[in-house]
Length: 160
Image 1 (cartoon, helix red, strand yellow):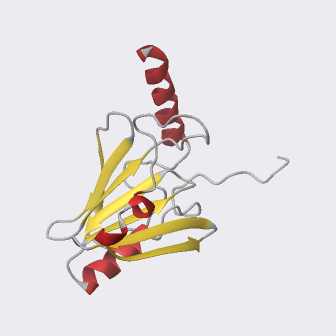
Image 2 (tube, rainbow, N blue to C red; image 1 turned 180 degrees about the vertical axis):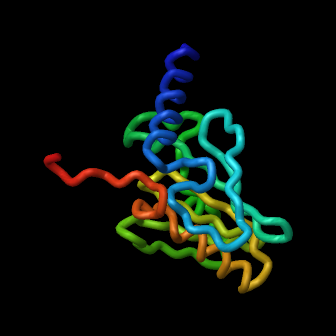
């Protein structure tokens, strides 16, 4: 029973690696502010990592498989964290479409900003303590996914 699960997990991880969504120096073509570095981390059942700089913000991310409707949710599957945050714990919540992708954002009362890209299966979280930190976090997170970023593979035109 464990073997098929780990095989599926390996295939998902490999597809993320080869699709250009994940690279050693960036994730999803995100644009980082000066001094920020991407560090992939070891996840158990999803792709995880952080974007940070010394004496700056630390943005954590978690990429999980998007569960198919009607099927049970498995470990490592994506869950829309902003949308699932209890209303009493939220300062504000917004939904927006950016670069053709739906984005859900919640700023919690504990100063954590949570942003998800539901079609991509990605959650970002970062502690923000000021308006300047909020601006820096959003300036980076909202550039994901960036398919035309430098170094990202470009999809061939249809019919080629």
